[in-house]
Image (cartoon, rainbow, N blue to C red; front, side, top):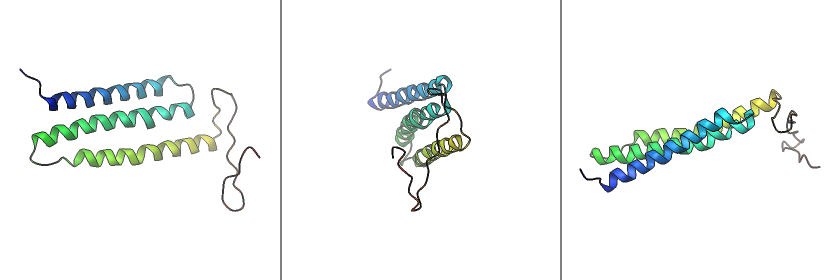
Length: 123
């Protein structure tokens, strides 16, 4: 039984994607507060699922007569929704004044200036 180049490439993307998903899942479980936990699913897990979906695109494109678009649509949807959901969770945590682990304090909500821009907290 011989291993083809395509199988090696597909296996590489599956293993790299799985490693990113594992790191993201461990980070989600182990990190102490909500602001640190946001990075695990929105960064590492997004890259991991992207790698697994890329392996799926390659596999099904080689098996079928044409390019597989289902996985490409899933990847686009994932890369659009993950950062948006992370941003919304962070904004909700700020509005609810969830305390952070490192300082034990509640983060201040950015103050808006009359022209609609956020004020610089250092001034």
